[in-house]
Image (cartoon, rainbow, N blue to C red; front, side, top):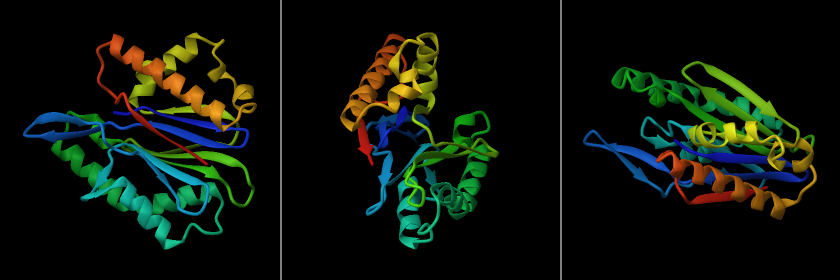
Length: 218
């Protein structure tokens, strides 16, 4: 359960992610709103984030991201190639965990889905891009390299996707809009959209994502 908004704009990428971390204790669901869902590479403008299942064979998603960064096997690759290389890096552990979840919780499809996003600047073309790896339970891949808003997670599907579809006049629907604004304006727009989704969640008595969030721009 999550709400993550990614904006590809004229000179960068910004990610706004809620902090909901859902665990189970004695058969009871426990929500903790203390999870940073955005991982940034140390010296290059590349960001990764995860939604869905976030722990694989005892290791959290960001540990895999840090270990992948430390291998340096991503250096010299296009951003899309980095995404596909990360797939190769994590897939064995990830699929083992999803298959185990499917056996242990056969009536809960949410524990058999996981996604990783690699976004930021392609260091070879200098273009900003977004690439998503998605397992549910079979693998799929999608990517964008134009200015746009991209929503991830159940929070987006439930509370914002429909709103944007039924309000075509909203600036967030416009590729041209994202291509014309700067980082400060992008962050304000993402915060506004997050607030709209939060209001709709409260009105529906939902509990899919946290009220607080983190933002990272590169």
